[in-house]
Figure 1 (cartoon, rainbow, N blue to C red):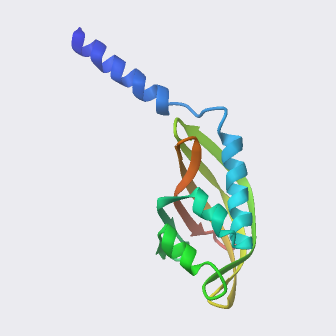
Figure 2 (figure 1 turned 120 degrees about the horizontal axis):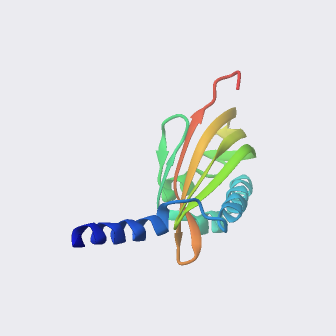
Length: 147
């Protein structure tokens, strides 16, 4: 009986932090995601440094990976220049201090000076630290041409 009560108490603590999507954070996450896109277009390094977690793993649709530091180094005229980022079908969910944004992005960018147009499906994963959402992981995949 005591073992069952202990397991129930542990489960209750876990579920109170991660069980169901919260109501207060999804709109905030969607706003941050949109602000991140605008910051990438404007090369607003101050905003991006604030929203990117120090342990960020950014997985591009090509399979290339970046850390926060390597992404920031590539951002600009000699690497990545995001001319336009438009998102659709966005959905945000919050589980305690974890947040997930999924959707589709249409990107117009220059990669080392070469124009590219990408249509991606993505997942952005955020963690809330000291009251602020930080992007800890981003993963995108190319959409088939007919989507």
